[in-house]
Length: 100
Image (cartoon, rainbow, N blue to C red; front, side, top):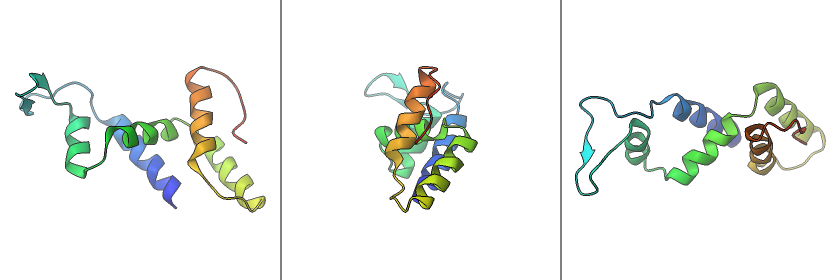
């Protein structure tokens, strides 16, 4: 399922170190360090907006996500990332709002 794969990718991206590792390349034309996440995204040909969205999806607790999947299937509705992203935004602002 696409949404599960996106969440898994988001979890992996969250685990990547943000700080530059010794020995990693530097983008000399812009004069800044390339983070491990940026380098991985570039190699995988995934844009940063997509990675950010995946990371937001990954921040939704597994229980909430699974409940959303189950409820959506029960109601015979299309499973989209929009509600999961909305839930993630509430989590980031520390609001307690259900996913559905």
